[in-house]
Length: 79
Image: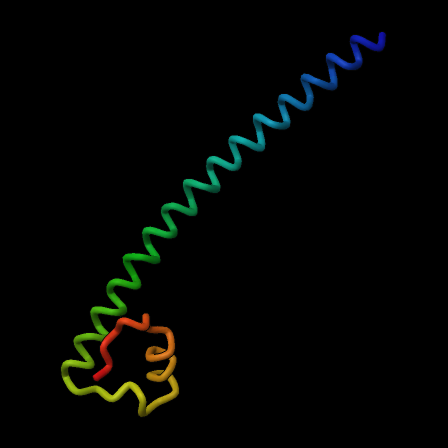
């Protein structure tokens, strides 16, 4: 009886692990897709910021602009 309970418990644990591993793989795939999209959007954002800066836009003149300045990488050239 004890051996059969242990076997049933092991099967249940194995099944639970498989389900969780499958879910983990799905979540990882979704995260990778979302990260690619975020990278793409960041590229568009910084392209627009660069274009606006080159057109003479003063990002320090507004709160929204300062948010852009503060979120930029240290290597971004604001001069």
